[in-house]
Every structure is written in structure tokens, then in C-alpha cells.
Length: 221
Image (cartoon, rainbow, N blue to C red; front, side, top):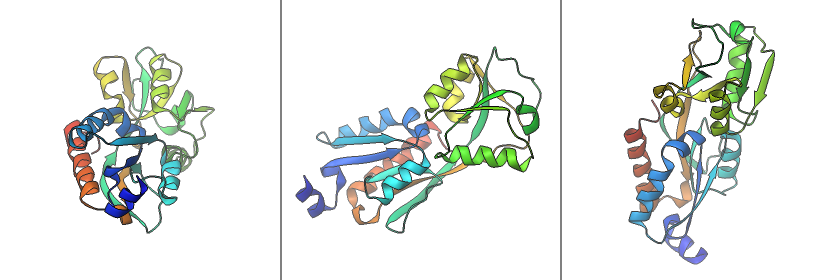
């Protein structure tokens, strides 16, 4: 496998090491894996889902071939191609007792909040959002899984910070609602990143396929 990989410079002819942010994994991964299997029936894929800090570190250490990551921090040997903006929002279960109007950071501070841990870019974003407003939440829990955060929101345990697109199905089904705030939370610039030394026809196919799926699923603005 190693001989073929380095001879061809094509990770799709060995084990594809794929890193993903959770938004892409939840919305697009099944479709991506299906498309890859159609094109490369023998492909073996190793998928790692993680936050910005962890995925960036794995890219830098050449432990991933390609990754979808928000606001990546990577070295010059990793190529970055912007693919869109991941919009963020505060969400509450429909039974959660929260004002229906537009809330300021100070007003949101009264509630139990659940956000990503410090290694995630979302944590940095929300910390700065509160600090810029001179507000300090009284009760903040952290969770490294968007899926589990969504469960906590749907069961009325907290107001959660979640990518808007990931929560759309629950909103459409009437299980959750977006809590409007001012100022708006800044979105995250998402990039597709890959090892420059590995780029060839195989990775180009994967990059193009990823872009196609992003449009199809309307994932990033």
C-alpha cells in the first residue's frame, strides 16, 4: 500500500485519511462515501471528525490527506481552498422558557448555555462575542459533539450554539427554534485542505466532488 501510494501520489489508491468538521460529517458524509465507493470500489477510508484545533494539528503532522475544517491553522505544506461560510446560531427547544424577542449577549447570559470546548473555533468565537459586549454568562457547559449538543437542546436542557444548517431539520419539524440575537454571531470561513505533495488527479476528483456536495446540500453560505 505504501509503495503504491508514494509511486502514484494518489491517496485514493490506498487508504484515504479524511478529516471533517462535524457540520460536513452530519450533512454530507454518507453521500460522499457513496460517491467514492462508486468511483473507487476498493477504496478504504479512515474518517476523523473533530474540531479546528485537532484537525489542523493532524493536517500539520501529515496524519490526514484531506480535510474540511473551519478557520484552519496549518503550515505551508498544506493547501487551503475556501469553500464557504458556516453560519452559527443559538437554538432552544420549543418548550424552553426563553424570551421571543431579540436578545443581547447580556440578556442571553441569564440562561444555561452549551457550547463547544476551547479547542474548537466555535468556542473562541462565542467567547469573543460575549467579551466584546462586556457580558459574562453565569452558566456555561461544554460539549465536543454537535449531535449531543442538539440532543440537549431538544430536551430543553440548555440553549446551544450550533451551525444553522445542521439544525435546520429540527427547526422545520417544529422541535427547535433559532433564538435571535444582536449583534449577530460571525460565521466561520470553511476550507478544504490537503497535503500539497499528495495533490494529483485523485485528490482533484475528491475536491471537485466535495464542492458539488456542498452545493447540493446547501451546507455553507
